[in-house]
Image (cartoon, rainbow, N blue to C red; front, side, top):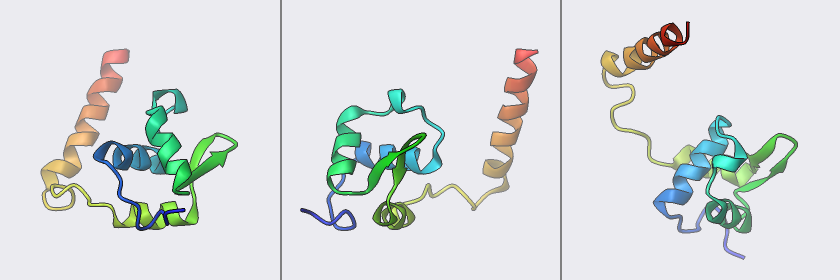
Length: 92
């Protein structure tokens, strides 16, 4: 069995790992092949509310590359807030 910390992941598998880590995606929206692979290398496990990270999964998530733009500009801090406010106003 390949250790999840050392397993080579595709970009799609990394995206799925991030989505599981953030817990913001319904399991039906996650790619099944990615979930199967992440289970296989023991980065995720089944939880009561869907997949969740294992200890190795948490470590692997922690070392994934982060978006270069985050934390370097106030624009990127303000944009999600502005977009969220606009979305809420559209629903009213």
